[in-house]
Image (tube, rainbow, N blue to C red; front, side):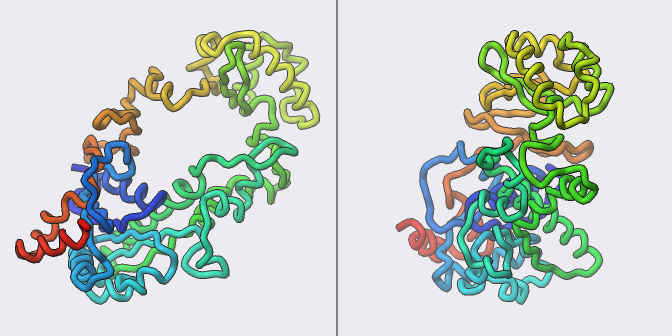
Length: 374
């Protein structure tokens, strides 16, 4: 069940954005087969990005293992890989090799720097990729070291989500052309696109090209997080005038003192006044006063607290799979809802069944299993 039911995806084992992209496709009903290198007997319920997938182990450096992968790809719609540029070609399963067997295959490639360019062969991580785009420079307090926003922006926002968009767009295009193609998803370019609003504001003279002095980077008193009396935090995002007026009313502050909302020169003093007010009461007090109102308010919840929030509980935004709490599949579909995902399987646990489905006899399957069990 799911919007992508009937679609087969081959995901070559990797880290970060490629497995997450495969997870999203699996959540939407695609038959995702992760191809790894070695069989592992241990269960992996905490490997959330591997939920809902079949898993196969193949020795891709052997002729038999490579041929099995090529056969798998003959019947696949999409392949996802996250190797450095040229590695797949050297191992014998690059786009040219696979398209010779399946011209309709969508070949999705995810890297930090992209398939070409001076940095294409250099190692890197999320922090490096977002640094090159201007995003990291814009995140943080004025005069302080830029703050790594976990690896949400590069790996998953600018990487996996753009890869998924690209391969699904190529599937749609294939209905017209009958041809597959290669998707070159570079995290740097995905992140650069995520920065579009700040780029627009900068071009219009509404954004300074430095951190901690703009409306959305924590400089403004009406768009920031504040510490409460119980050493917890709340967030306020009262940008629009009517929401801002309600904030001042809820905080019982002098409207005349806060009249010049958009004057950056007054932001430090106004922020200090709001911080002092917020610090007088607990997080729960402010939740009872402002949550659900048009102040644009939310408490800062920990990962363990978030699933217990009434809104998240009402929407079943979090689920538990084999004892592991995780986000439910998203987005939601009216006619083709996503099934509840199964937990990640031990790596290689579907090898025999998949190889048999490709037509290999029992003796050959046993030999190939032995090659990846050592």
